[in-house]
Image (cartoon, rainbow, N blue to C red; front, side, top):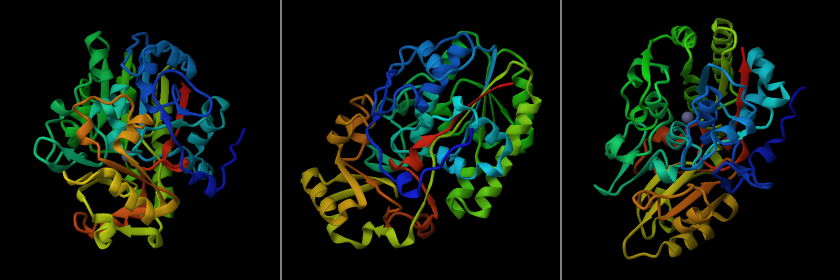
Length: 407
Ligand SMILES: [Zn+2]
C-alpha cells in the first residue's frame, strides 16, 4: 500500500501543541507516537522495561508502537530523515520503501520542539523531554556564565553531565546487566552530545559507514540493544537543501546501508528506524536578518536557538511581552511568537525543571512556511543562508518515521 504525500502547503502547516506522555489524545500530536517513546518501548520489547518520568509504562508504549518481543534489538537513528521528506522520495529507496508500504509503519511519529538534533537527542536518549534534559536548542543561554552556548559541541556550555541529569535509557539498561552497544564515528565516542544524551553504552567505533553497519550486525548477535547513527542525510540536506540530487544520493546511500544491515542481521532481530527531525527548504526571499531590523532588537539582550526556532533573552529592565508585541506586529503570520510562560504552558518543552527554566528564551519564535530568522551579528554568513533548515513546528520538520522490521 503506497503513501499519498500531502501537498507542500499542508506539509508546511504549523502543528501544536505536541504532547508528552503515554496517552494519545485525539487532536494532539505526540503521546505514544513520539521520539521520547522509542527507547522505553524497545527496552520493553527486549524484556527489560525502563520507565521514565515522561513514560511510566514502557509496556504500553511497546503495544502502542506494535513492537514485537525480541532478544536483540537494533535502533537506527537517521539524522534529518523526516517522514515526509522520505515518503516524497520513496521511489529511490527500495528497502525503506518496502518498510513504508507496511500499514504498521505508516502513521508518522513526532519529534520534539524545537525540532532539532540537540533537543531531539536528549529526548531520544533519556525518554523524557527538553524541559528535563536542559537540552533545548542548537544554542541556548548558559545561566552560569551568561553566554549563549552552542550545544552540538557544548561550546561555553555547562559540563554535559551537569546539564543533562536524567539517566539515559542506555545507562539504566546496563545497570540491569543488559548489553548496550553504540556503533558510530570515532570522534563521537566521547563527544559532549554523546556524554549528555547517549552515555552508558559500549562504544564501537569505525571510520567507514559500511564497517559500522557490519559492527552493528555483529553486536546484535548477542541479546541486548544496539544503536547505530547515520549522519549524512542531515549534513547534505543542510548544505544542498533536501530533495536535491545530492540529498537524494545521500538518501540512497542510507538505504543501501540499512539494506546491508537487514541482510547481515540474525533472524529474529528487531530493527527500529527513526530520525531526530525532518527538514524544510529555506526560501532566500523569506530570510529575515534580525541584525538589520532595529524593531526586532529593541529590548533584546541575547539571541539564541536557530533560524527556524529563535530564542530571545530580554534585557533585565524590559518586559518580554513588549518584545513579543513588536515581533508579532513585524512578523504577522510569518511566525508564532510565544513568551516562555506561554510555551511552557502549552507543554512545548514537557515538564520543565526550575534549573532549566532560565535556559529557555524569554521568547520563543517558531518560523512558519519557509521563513528563516537569522542574526548576521553572531552567525557566519553561510550559516544564515543554509538551503536546508529545521527547528520549527511544521509537519515537514516534526514528523519522523518509526519503521519496524523484524528480520
Ligand atoms: Zn539532526
